[in-house]
Length: 162
Ligand code: S3P
Image: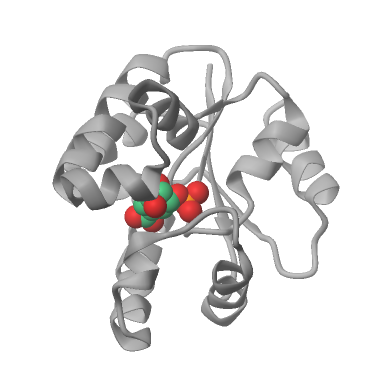
């Protein structure tokens, strides 16, 4: 059964998944490779709604694999994906404070996030607040990542589902 990592942008989902298994599936990476552009470029070219459809296809395809899956922070925006995730028993929410995440996102020169670039701080905060309750509802395990290393987060996940 899949272990699926959810949480806000820059919460460490992809890094943790790759640490546990270098062959982990990352929904953003699959979309980028399939369309030959970064997720930010895809987002800007086709818009959020179409990007969410791509996420639905990828999650729908891989959710039944016995793999670790890291997801984009907005994967829970789709009702289809919410339904898919609520049928799973190994959904891990990597939780972190808004201020810490914003600092990481702003410092991340490799991954651009369109929603961050195109929102005011209070709009971005509203997205964070709204999603937080969805992450909480859909997850079967919450890990508060504050002051934890990737190794510690990974061990917690593995210990919970072994
Ligand atoms: C998004 C998060 C990004 C990426 C896209 C949209 C979001 O992934 O899927 O930019 O809506 O939260 P990360 O969570 O890996 O930053």
